[in-house]
Length: 172
Length: 172
Length: 172
Image (cartoon, rainbow over all chains, first blue to last red; front, top):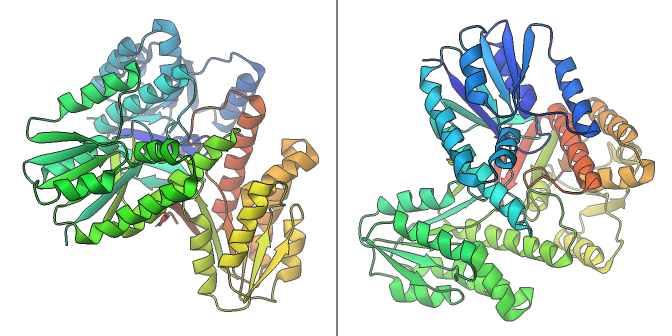
């Protein structure tokens, strides 16, 4: 059974750098499964910076919704697969389904697929629940959903890290 | 002297599950002291889900303001008492008093009462200070108050945990 | 080479108390380098409370922008120097330059100056990236900047702490 690593943390807290460095330990080639779609200038630039930071031994696959299918297709063809990030994937699913329950079903299906993977998997997520309760009901609902998804996936992972100011802390 | 356990963490980070599981370790019957009043549909549903998750060996007491009195009344009659949650209690007190200082007085009185309890006590709170500074002065003032209350109560507790993605981390 | 200690955490999570207590361990006299300018009533009061809490063996220097110059000037004249706080300093720099890159240059210059200091240095910062993504682009940009600054400075520090509910956790 392949190792599953879950990384959570705040914005710009070093999650992606940690994930890339843990992936590099598994060897080469590596698969970067990007869930973010470049919808605006801000995001296009950030995606380009991330891609530049990774070397040519990384192959990038873009998949905003069907993560489990993309994983099944990449499985066994790389030394490790990095999914960056779960929170954007959930955002995409929430827009797609316009309901919480089918998003949680997809998250649960992803967690259940961990046990059949042959390739080590590293997932990057975001901690979004440690600020003031958002005034807007959609933001509250998203915050709850992101927290539940983190719980489901972290429970199914072998190793879990949280990062602060670029320093990782191993939780499990 | 009974054990006092303080649990903080973000929204949907597994605080209540951890609290319930720690309480179950003390035996049965157990007292669930709920500070939340079902003001709207969203909250009514959440309270019902939480109550369903706990078994019949839990007795629920609802007390939005007079926690110390409710604790004194429950003390010695259960194997453990769980207060869920401190942040809602503080919100209720702030609406009630419309001032910060009397809220902090009640928090301090609660912390001072820990030493006379005969029944183990588990308190659930929220971390609300790790986001961007709120633009609205009331939210900033609430955030400060919640942080100060967490410091006062955690200092008086025997064990303190913070949860991330459902994984507890013991701080003390 | 003098010891560099970096402390991050949420609002009212006990960062300043921890920083002051770690500084006191180095002896006396001590330098408090305040980056906050008392712009309104709320801040004036908070600054006065902090100053009152520290004793007369602390000398306060106020410097909103030129931290590296203030450090060079204080270096060697105290048993320890405490900078409180980095997040306000970055806010001041962002208003001053009205651009992100020169702020990061100043942060990097500060990190590079650590190795030449003769006096132990304790820096207090804030974790602002663990809430919901802010709707406003300026807040998002500030959040990213604060996170990158935390990474740069924590990487260059010897010891790094994060505080929750007044309880410090040593990360490094």
